[in-house]
Length: 84
Image 1 (cartoon, rainbow, N blue to C red):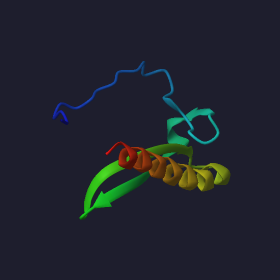
Image 2 (image 1 turned 30 degrees about the horizontal axis):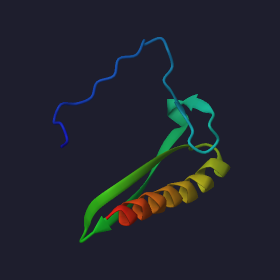
Image 3 (image 1 turned 180 degrees about the vertical axis):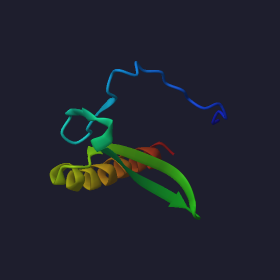
């Protein structure tokens, strides 16, 4: 069940927000991190979504994020199928 209450995160305003890149594992500033989504749908309804953070300013991370998102989504789908 999804809550209607928004998630609010507080961070020291003087501190820069950073995220780890899921491709190169480097901690990068928020402004250069992008998010790629890979989704699986059944009858036009999303049943599974996998998100990958990557360095939007680095071609290698952009290219690898496509493969990573798809591979991880396929793995999760195979696990779900094998358990049913």
